[in-house]
Image (cartoon, rainbow, N blue to C red; front, top):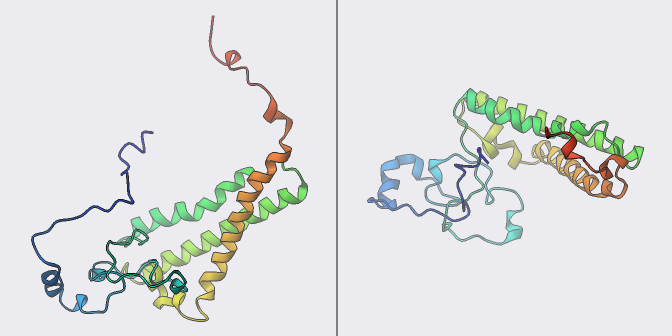
Length: 207
């Protein structure tokens, strides 16, 4: 509750900014940076290429988007400007998959399901760890000027180098699905301790 106190609400509702200068003048003042063709809005030059829906492969399957977009997309990556921000972002992301290792010795309905849980959790940790390490190294190597799809000269958008991104991505997605499904199907055979009544009064001081 405390950490959510200042969390923005209604994030899907755009905030309209009113300015005293026209977009045309902004583009003129921006110079060469604003002369490149834009993918989403005329203000694409403000932020480097990142993970946005219009840049991902197979985006045409969802149909043509309006140009320019009526609002700034909410699926952009932020620019990581220094080593502290890179580390602060990379370490929690890489560690996310390892949290599930807490259930390494939990009771599972079958030994097969327990081993499946263990291997998928290990796989998630490896994929996220290596992925975050590569992304962090690429951002640092690029002097904090690249991110998202522009890292390592845009290898994620070229064949066959994009397989280095999509194959681990598919592995991670599959591992996540296994974990989610196992959480649900394990409810069919819960350990006996889950059905014990907790006598809270025995744990609280009372007269």
